[in-house]
Image (cartoon, rainbow, N blue to C red):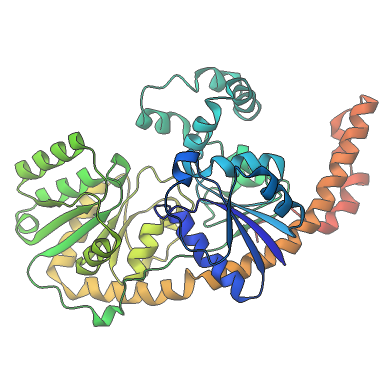
Length: 433
């Protein structure tokens, strides 16, 4: 089977990293895979992952069109970053296929796309969310306000889902909007991910001295770093016995604010900024606990939480979205309504029994190794393709009937009559599998 997969390829993309794993699993099953890189022009120039197959830029329209025409199925990896997914959106509109949906909030993707298409963007907003939201949508002052004001009322999940012939996503919490918009089937399967620098949890050296807590990735408000600092600062034993490290990009003003907060609270805070892969892997191995708090939670799955479990680390998560669906015995859950107090209790518990962090991490690692695999993901994709292709028959039939009804100037409600729905029901397209 020939698959054309549209994805960001740059090494800094976690979605690209995940796709590399899945592509190699598909190649091992003797599928023919062609990869189309979807980044904006300035990102396309950067070094890509090694996918082990032909990779072409989305801007090479002639070659991409040739590959699309000869493909058995098109697959789009889509997340909430326009610079990474510009080409994916462009080609999805022209050549629909299966969307692997990595985020249930796509506002930043839509915002970037809309800058040169404001009239079309307003039409889309009005269609899905009404004229009032469309009128106010672009009148926001900053990213935090944008997310808080649109994540519930206008997440744009429907925009991408409506262009897909089927959707594969990685948790259930945001599927209702997907199913409302996608005419084809919807599948849920665990994200594929890896941890190249991990060792078996039982081989990790015993932590001595302070409990080492780590947050990784771009330091922004939704990672709840301030809450971790406040929780540690709230107790004398925690202030004395916890070392808190941040590894990831951080703006100078944010670094100054957090440094000052930690100093006033008597918290040992180590800010390492961005580091190379080897240094990041070492930081994760050295940590006892990884904080993967997210509020608000917008993603269909968290690569950093999965990676933390694959490393065999006790992992703290917010009890919401994707994280809520993780089994309670493998992660430490914090209520978004009682964040600081819950964090304090977790830190005190781990400090009073240092071996408990390693025990939780070991169990989480064993489960994650069996769950978040490229082989599982590739198998789900293989299962999805024939179902989606059958669903296209139904979608084509409905489009045909809709065209006829429009020519007759008849009511579109005719499409909901038993005479039309009953014959098509054998395909049973819009279900979660």
